[in-house]
Image 1: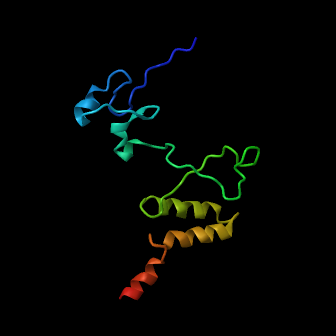
Image 2 (image 1 turned 45 degrees about the horizontal axis):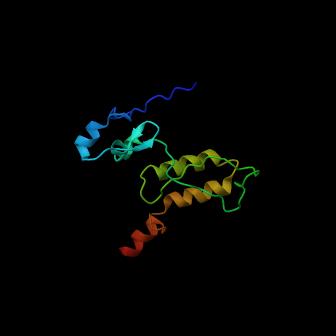
Image 3 (image 1 turned 60 degrees about the vertical axis):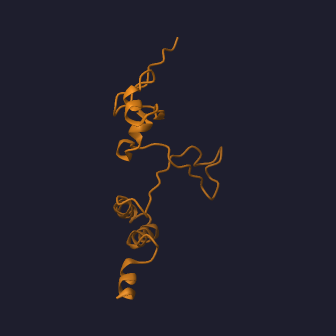
Length: 128
């Protein structure tokens, strides 16, 4: 016999049976966003950690059932809004530089671009 344990939010401590502090704070009950995080606490994105925000599919279809990449995990970076994405790209570029030099070069170039895709230096000079 399997005994189901009650969920407890790792931030505020509300449970499946008692989310009175969430109701007091926001006027309505929370719901579960992850196994141990309620919706009220998930509003502060710093509380989330890794969670299933994106659905990624390979364009070469090698993630189909029976293919090499079926069931693989992927991590998405937002190069437009996330200030930590560019340093992450740069670190990855350095890590793969010897084995995948073309990919490394492309990643370094991508990290130099601003959010619109134009190289930052070129835009500055053109607007001067």
